[in-house]
Image 1 (tube, rainbow, N blue to C red):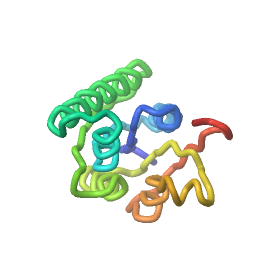
Image 2 (image 1 turned 90 degrees about the vertical axis):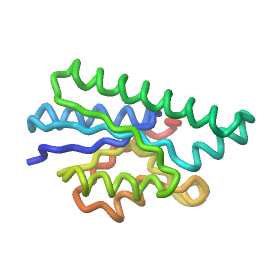
Image 3 (image 1 turned 45 degrees about the vertical axis):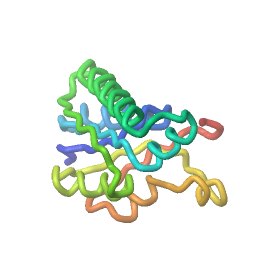
Image 4 (image 1 turned 180 degrees about the vertical axis):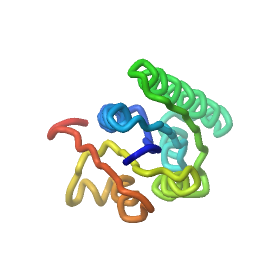
Length: 152
């Protein structure tokens, strides 16, 4: 059964749904969770453009927010009695799916759990789909936890 569950988190409500399902599974199987947060190129570029930060300041802010997000997620997991660890990545050389797949391989994950909006059509094409990229390339099973219709 699943003993090493990888959970990418980004702080969104959808990500929280995936984390909660991963915690539930970990409790059932006595698994360890590894939470990962990725400061990626797209987030960096959008934030620089939107807020007019200097690149160095913004990267520091994204790192700090990512570390806080991981700590909050790990605390929630520990409160439910599950072993957890967290990793923060700066991912300026790979896509988010590539980084998650590489982490699954190197950590020898048994399962990846991801919250997803389940967008279709043009919205998915425009916004991209990290979940789909991970699903297509993952070396292990992937559990997609879909957000209820109308969830942002």
